[in-house]
Structure formats: structure tokens, C-alpha cells
Length: 263
Length: 155
Image (cartoon, rainbow over all chains, first blue to last red; front, side, top):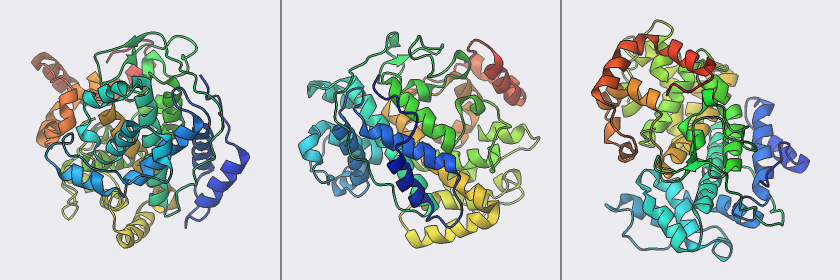
């Protein structure tokens, strides 16, 4: 495991706070802390990608929002036959394999039509299912941060400068296949050093989904705990924030419906 | 989760405006009476996920009036959070958690959620499990709480 940063870099935190300070109402500081900690981790070498590649994946998640080819493909009957060129972030094509760019664009623009073949295409390109899961984690986290900022009416956070170093290629023990497109750890508390990911009583599939890359689960928990609820609060239906639980779940359900997400 | 959280407080909820996005009829008969500020929260969510920036400014002010500044911040954060959750589920081909699948069988059918492309990731709930879930639905809040306290998984 490489990502041990549980504290944001001071300069990143200062920038994130400055972004959130432009909101017309005060934004609680745990949001700034979580966003800045994620961006601090993003810059570091990950499990399968370098820091530069991770930041490029994040930039690509942003570029996908305005990609004309993605719009054309989303309207097409089949998501896997149309050929074309993505609108990419500056420099991404020099840093990232084409399949990684394509996957990030699909995750952002056409996620409901992702099929196991996409992960096979990763493997055919000499990458691994771990590369896919880490790219998925980065793409969705940046999307999450950006949508929070859009909702609040503030500019998206600046992406951090990458930290040099090599990815760890760490693969946890005890992975199981067959439940989803990617191998996942079981429902019970994972063995050390991943026993912090969840406990038997609060495991949810959405956390397990990223467990091929344990640090991606840690990112998920970090952001969800500030933006939604902690894993322990999830099962207590009386638990809310300023919004009560029913109000929170109204927003969550509407996001799922617009995205046509079954989950 | 929404239905369970509303029913725990002795209310019922019609979830149709959530699937259609039509908020004109949010009145005493459906989600509007069960969830304070539902109309404003739904319209704000739609605006964040849409591309009309001027409308988003309007919806932002609407939701601040409805649920207050802190509630607005919560709402923006939940939108962002679920923009991530749904893509993880779809990107990983994730099946629904067993307990949620059993308890939501009826509304998924009613709201057309079973027609979504990603529905194929989850196996259908068997008739016995569906029957048990139907009987246990009034206790769903308690069951979730129990699940959180047990040292083993019941899903």
C-alpha cells in the first residue's frame, strides 16, 4: 500500500478552502478536509498507476464531460461498435494508454453500458483488473468532487502536481470472483492490513466493489463519510445531518434515477 | 433506504416523482408530505446534473430557502456522493445487496427500475425471499439497526 496520507497537504488544503470560501453560504470544514486529503492522495503513486498517471486519469474524467465522441456513442444503439476519437485533456494521450482514456470516458458518460469486455480490453492492452479498479476509483471521485463544487456554485478544485514514485502493485489476499465484473474481498472483516476497510456488520457491496485496490476503498470511505454518512451510520435510518435521513435519501434516489442506476 | 427511513417515522411515501422527475404534483398524497422540502431537493438535484447554469442558480436559492444554508450544503454533497456511487456500481457490475434487493422488489417493479441496463447485474429475488421480505417490511428499520449491531452478516 502506498497511500497512507490521512492528512491533506497544507497548500492543497488552503486552495480547497479558498475554493469553498467562494460559496454563498459557509461550507463545513470536514468537506474541505476530505476533498484536500483525497487530492493529496491522488498526487501520490498509487497501487497500479504512478502519480502522474493518476492525475492524468482525473483530468480525463473532467475532459469526458465535454467529449463529443462520448455524446455520439451514448446515443448509439451499441456502446462498443462506434469508432471515434475522444476529446482528451492536454497531455493525457502521452501519459495514459488509449484503453484507460476510453474507460474513464465510459465511466463518466455511459456507465450503465459497461460490460466485462471492457476489463478484458484492459488485460489485452497489458494492464490488469487492478488498473481498471484504480482508474474507476479516481474517475468517480473526481466526478464526485466536481459535482459537489457545481452544486455549491464554486469552481472545481485545481488538480495537484504529481509526486514521483512507483506504484506498489499490491493485490490483497482473499479476493473472490463471480459476484461482479471485478474480484472483491468477502463480506466479513478483511484480514490485516486491510481490516480497516469494513467490518462484518457494515460491509456493503459498493465498498467491496473497490476492494481489489484497498486504497480506493479508503478514498471512498473518506469522501462518503464527509459528503454522505459514515459506513456505521448507513444502517441507522434515524441518522442524518442537517438534512434528515429521508431528505438525504430523496436526493440520493433522484441522482440514481437520473443516472438510471439499478443499485 | 428512502422508503424505509420514511416508514420508520410512521409515514408512507409515493416514490414516483423520484423516477419521473415530475415535481408538479408533489402534494399531500405523495413524497411532498413525507419529506420536507422534497420538491426543492429534487429540482436542485436535477439542476446540478443538468447543464443549465442559470436554472441551477435559481434552484440553489430555492433549496437554501427550503432547507437552510446547512441543509443546502448537505444536499450538494449528497448529489456529488451519489454521482460517484452509481458509477462504482455500474462500473464494477455490482449486484444489489441481498437485504436491499429483497425489500425493494416491489418498488423496483413499480418504478420501472428493473428495466435499467444495470439491473442485469442482480439475480431476481426468489418467491420465498420475496414473501419473507413482504412480511418483514414494517420492521425494516429495526432489521437494519439489528444488522449494524450483530457481529455477523445477515445479508
